[in-house]
Image (cartoon, rainbow, N blue to C red; front, side, top):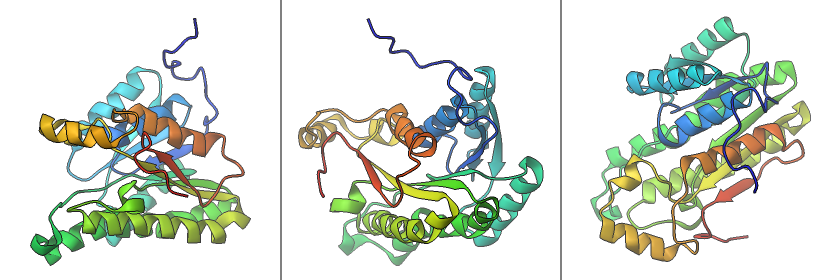
Amino acid sequence: MLETRPKPFQEFAPLVGKVALITGGSRGIGAAISAELARCGAHTIVNYVRGKDAAEQTVGQIVEAGGSARSEAGDVADEASVKAMVERIVEKDGKIDILVNNAGILRDRTFRKMSLSDWREVIDTNLCSVMNTCHFIVPHMIEQQSGRIVNISSFVGQMGNFGQANYSAAKAGIIGFTKSLAIELARYNIMVNTVCPGFVNTEMWRSVPEPIQEKILDRIPMHRVAEPDEIARGVRFLVTEADYITGQSLNINGGIYMGW
């Protein structure tokens, strides 16, 4: 029978000596990504804005399992905050080899009810944050002639979704940004890719009423949502094994979107 349990920390360690920053890394998908990259040997920096306790809990679990991690506060929607955070990381940890742009929020409304504040908050946190982190981290990657950037988008950015015009626009923008940045940075051995999850078993999913969950599951060919670890393994693949993959979108969605 095949072994299906996760390997312990350090048994599979292609990222030893690498420093990875995961924005919004304290819970859900972000926490799973933080743990997965630490399991592969990376020194993982768990970014948070307000969830300090959750970030410290994620760090504690990684360290207890034998990995290396610490938390780092910073509002990725704020340019000055990102600049200061990157400066602190480079001063303390020496470099940033891997950037995972995972931070995001929802302000779901039908377009008729969506306020400009709903729009701006989602665009700033989900899309402008990617520009902010890349703006200050990419020069360091260019200097070291290597890097891996993974931006977490969504199937919603590929096909749209009712009540999510702001979120869809932000996630679609991430895909376009990724493709353009990948073209520019390939010459420096910096790979830039996107992961597009479908519905994922996080606190947000568990808060959805069961009748609505069933309607959503009926739309998914695999008739289940993803586990955060499944998204994390996709990110791990892109930063450890995808040396000839850049500008691509890795769809981990159970078949809910099968576009070209």
